[in-house]
Length: 173
Image 1 (cartoon, rainbow, N blue to C red):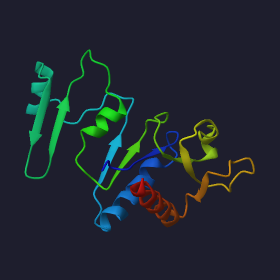
Image 2 (image 1 turned 120 degrees about the vertical axis):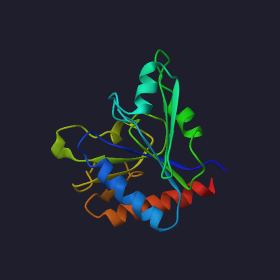
Image 3 (image 1 turned 90 degrees about the vertical axis):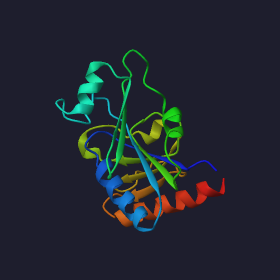
Image 4 (image 1 turned 120 degrees about the horizontal axis):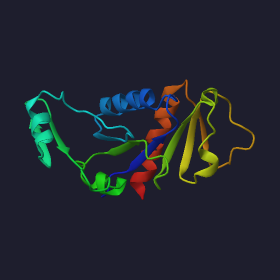
């Protein structure tokens, strides 16, 4: 069975990471295995430049696997190859009860939008048929489509309850 996947989307500063941190901790407390894919538009550094693993990567290694008694990390340099698509990345993850994806705003996956109008950005849900729910700090707008669940972002337990319902529904498919 494929692992259910749910995207958490929204503009920078909306509170996606804070909400995800809560949701992941609560799901793990319920003995669920959760994977998270975090997309960044920036060049991320996973190890200090002076460490051995970074030095091997800088020397030209295609992949560097760093192993310790606490975790492993594989850093793969893309160099001149295109960034893999989300579907390819999800296939590389370990089996889990749920894959949560932060970023990939326009991916064709089920999504929860975190929306704060105070950021001055427009909502994504009017233009994205894959958004199933919106967690916001404002009441539901009158023109919000009926199929979208509107959640109070400040009541994180309600958002978690919606994620659990989504997971229950996704497992039946």
